Image (cartoon, rainbow, N blue to C red; front, side, top):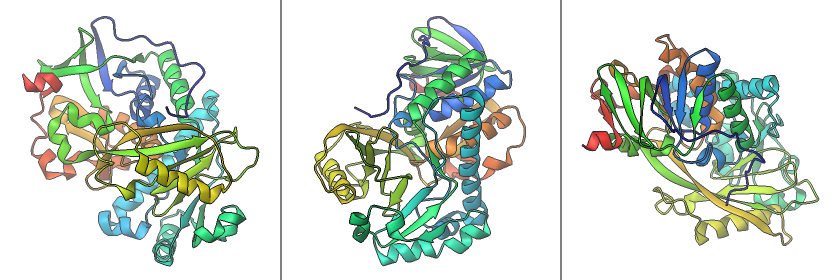
Length: 411
């Protein structure tokens, strides 16, 4: 069971009748909810369908980090994507945090938001040099990261487990489900029709509109947006070549009297991560590098191997016995090149996508959906230009031929 819970989810009903809408968003996580809010705020008629509970998948099963700079060395991102692509993702991370802060403060959303900065810890000299070599590149692109003493980053008893520490002052953290439930309620106030427990079965383009089957009803939409992250290939199977499901596991302790961690923290190239909640719980997860094959696929389950490794990491931070109150996992959508797919899949048939966040949806989605809203209005959206799905040849080949999804595509 995940740690994150909200005292009162918004009272939003499943889809109970056929309807028409301008934009239909499929998926009720960070991507779908921020997009629905943005479109409703702009005056669009938007409907959102979520198969389960709002934020019930990885959007409500993560660590609640708002990080701009990458866990892996920035120089590696430049080598993989070019400077323009690497810098664009940093800017999206920064704009996402700014957007979320604006929403939290402007709407008065109660979600334990804090801007306390973040830490990157290394375990070996090799990892330290990899991150250190990126400091100049990050500074060049306007994202300061600085090296600090390990003893300023972790409790003294844990310092020997790490080689170096780096600090990013602009990052933050929040309670993901409280934020998303509150934002969904605000979107509904602005006219967005949001329906949890409303699974899309199939969809077909018919005479200029999408006809989407859900709960025995039909939603007609001029534009359809897939915001289903790891689960997108289940509606559009050929996307399995570019978006793969990967599992992440976490646990949370009982509330502690002492404060051990003051900032969200990545370690070991981002494979290990932790934070402490306002009520004192240590939240820690990752270690998927110990079993890459086992942590692939759609099974949402915890495993002894990974949970034991996480507990070993916990003992580094807290040597004394402590009760574990929560254990959980979530399925992330990993893009083939590590960057999300945001933009038109098939502009001729008004089909867009915002998915494949490679474990960083909370830190990237809010800016991506703000830009995507512009694209859906047939405006230029330079901020997401490097995330165009057409960068993948197999998607470019089908960019004007997608007319059916899910069961409709199989029939």
